[in-house]
Image (cartoon, rainbow, N blue to C red; front, side):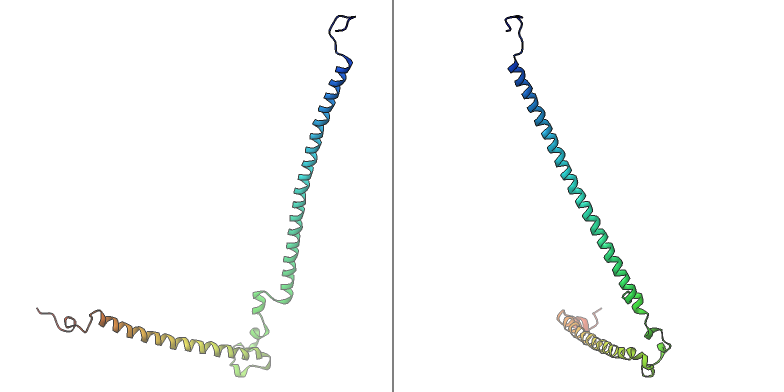
Length: 160
């Protein structure tokens, strides 16, 4: 108590301690605010970096795709362009292979492919014929084993 005024009061030391406590609380609070703000900025920077990377990848992919299209247009690597050749658009499309003009040599080379294909078709037909014979032989054995046409009940007319 203050002996002069006879009323309770706040001493100078107590006021300074309170002021320091409020300053520490203020500093701590705004330090947290600052830290949160910096963390938020790092987070936003991370997302912005990812968006930029995705945009760069999309641009690179678009560039590669357009380059591939340009190359395909220049080299004729599409299906439609491959089918349109001087061999197929010439006047000799219906001519026999022996009478092709000299610039149609590619078609005469295709005759070897046709011969090979025919040989494969002939071998396949022969294989199918052999398989049919084997099936017929197995069928007769199965009918006999199952008591088919070789049993008397199958070879004689039933008694009336």
